[in-house]
Amino acid sequence: MAKEEAFMTCSECGRSTASTSAYRRFVSDLLFTFGWIAATVLFGVMAASVHDDFVEDFEDRIKHPDEYRMRLERDREWMEMYEAAQP
Image 1: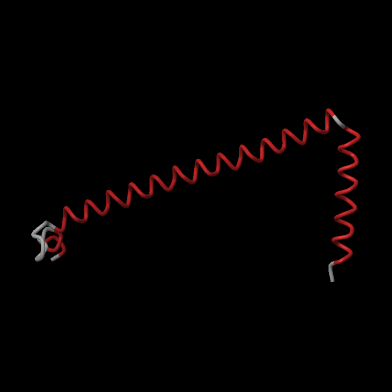
Image 2: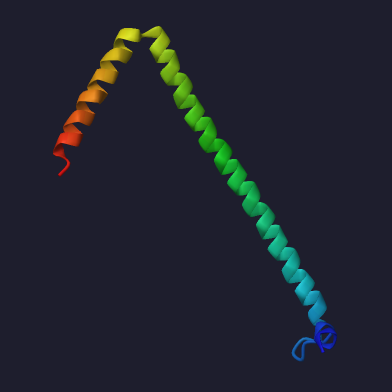
């Protein structure tokens, strides 16, 4: 019975249900592929952004060590105030 249903024709348009199923499978595979491509590109952009921030931070540490230490101290003080404010 499963084979019979696979090759039935649509009563409205006369197309074979097998071709409709193949078309839906093709569209599904195409959307899946584009989804993976988009996710990969998004991950790459995010990784590049994080890498740029890391490189910029590292360059600041090398070029301006005093300013870097002041920023670390400021961040440390902010974290202490934040932790003290927590219940």
